[in-house]
Figure 1 (cartoon, rainbow, N blue to C red):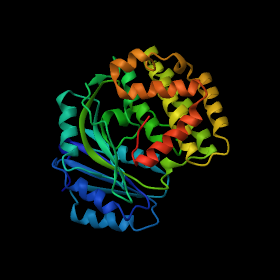
Figure 2 (cartoon, helix red, strand yellow):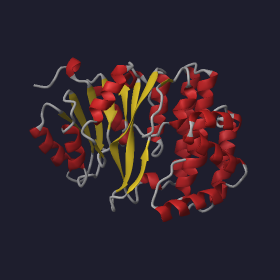
Figure 3 (cartoon, rainbow, N blue to C red):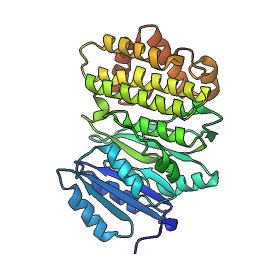
Figure 4 (cartoon, rainbow, N blue to C red):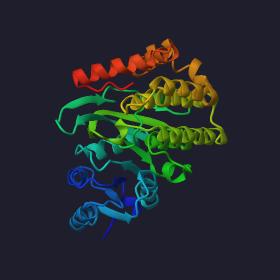
Length: 351
């Protein structure tokens, strides 16, 4: 018999689409967690391969842990919401179906969250080249002090834009705002920005690489189109409207503006540079115009300055350097140099 709601400490949501090659390893890593009181909600998002067969097999072997939602294809965003609605855990976590977790992933994050009654618990992770097995980077693996989003909203800028190395308080996700038109890229980031708005409580860290994020060539994260950029721009405006409607503080709005600059001014343009964009300079100019109009405090942000960078470390120093390149009109050669260095050294330096 399945555990009651009060017995489930964590509900893990695993979206599945066209990943039959990787799914068994992902499921094995979750079933084998040292924390036993978990459920694994697998979303078969109309996958055309054998994902559903694999899920049914694992469900038959672990009926107390694995829950399957079999549905028509609607994308990761809608699948996550379906999983959130069904989740019975005190906390909700995520794992992509082509990644896998270390055995103590759930236990360490849960204990960290409970230890300080955190709204969000975050662990480090490894980026691994799927084809070669080469480790590209370890991220969020240096010790960080816990913080309250209400007290230090600028700290959300340093958090990676993916949900799969985090636990969220379940009531936060069940109560937060949905997006009318979630974008095909950067949807993970926007999902989290809405969560941080809903519950501006404590964020705590486990500085160990507990998730193995597999970098696949041809992944959507490495390419983007002009149409997708437009969808991301529209979705960011919807998130900003949510912040205004919720009465976000001036400081939290400034953190949102700085986050928009980082991801729309730098990260999205980097993806465009990997997509053979016809005119990257024009794309950079459009992003600058968009940011100035809709997220105007990015230019004079208290979180993108030398003082804040000295106080809060490498993430903010890199952000400061990239902002200077952006404002000086040097982002295109800067991104080209970045690509040359990372490809030659086979590393992945996140900005």
